[in-house]
Image (cartoon, rainbow, N blue to C red):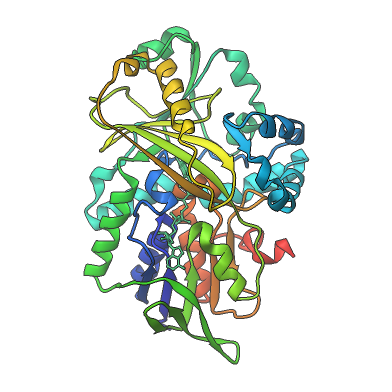
Length: 418
Ligand SMILES: Cc1cc2nc3c(=O)[nH]c(=O)nc-3n(C[C@H](O)[C@H](O)[C@H](O)COP(=O)(O)OP(=O)(O)OC[C@H]3O[C@@H](n4cnc5c(N)ncnc54)[C@H](O)[C@@H]3O)c2cc1C
């Protein structure tokens, strides 16, 4: 049976979900309040990594011990704004609890892996189909460490990646600097993940993919979705700022704004913004072979079409607080240590702040809403939405159209928060 599926939001998750639904012959209506892949979306400014190895959630055992330091140091790589603590408290408690045992982390990692599996392969397929091959690269990904002991301290992630068949090369100081000659000498150990890829410009990739889908029959509506027309528990349409759009299925792919729309359906999803920043050195000539991540800063450094991008930082301060641009100064400082030649760069830079849509348990919310089985949650991908988008889209479209799911859908259901 063919459906009319309204997909609300055209960040990476909405774009992928629309692609999957269109490929299966459904009529797709994309409703977007901003522009597809535009600056308002988290999908615009991320580090652009497609990394199947993102198996670990952010909350891991012992994290609670670090919380006082997150409050004291407002400019650390993970910080909580003191004034926001009261509002954040319920989410924070769930966040700490979700990572307080190895068993919970292992269960969560399994569910993350199901979404991440073969992600780069699927990106290449979509890119080939839509004529966007040049945006998807497989240059591998490199993690760099001050020394080998720092790598060994991350044994939980290493063990989980190994258990799931992911392999990487380990580079000593000489190999690391031979492969990445621009790298600063503070780093003496590295791991190279050849299965990793990246997008050369995530925002433009999404915008062009959406345009290609419009050319194939997807309807694009420039409007903000405000609610749902439901009669006798069946969906009749999506209310928007430009009227009600008739459809028989709706998937909420609005990133951090998922919480507000979910509320309209009677579901209360604990979703918080883990605010992140990027800085781009726009006129820098190409540097480095692969994207890099330093273990001490946890930021992604990626050569993009618009320049060298450094993206990272986690700031829990809510949606309305203005950006704290001192964070991009921190990114710049790290960049100088990692790639010392960038210290002399005096050219144009651009900066950005965006909202990672994060649930407390490291898994997105994917599946039917409680009150109407025609409306679906499709958000909450936190730090890994680029990587998890193809898997999430396959799951969401199979659920929305009543097909067998490609893997167990239970871990992502909204009911887990009740
Ligand atoms: C600094 C940083 C670095 C990151 N690095 C990586 C990385 O390297 N790899 C990775 O996998 N992930 C990374 N992420 C995470 C990733 O960017 C997010 O998980 C992902 O972009 C979320 O995508 P989304 O489509 O759910 O949300 P968004 O991209 O935010 O898209 C939501 C869309 O919905 C629209 N919308 C909202 N409300 C409405 C409404 N009511 N009606 C209509 N439209 C609406 C918005 O305008 C927007 O276009 C990073 C994030 C940050 C901030």
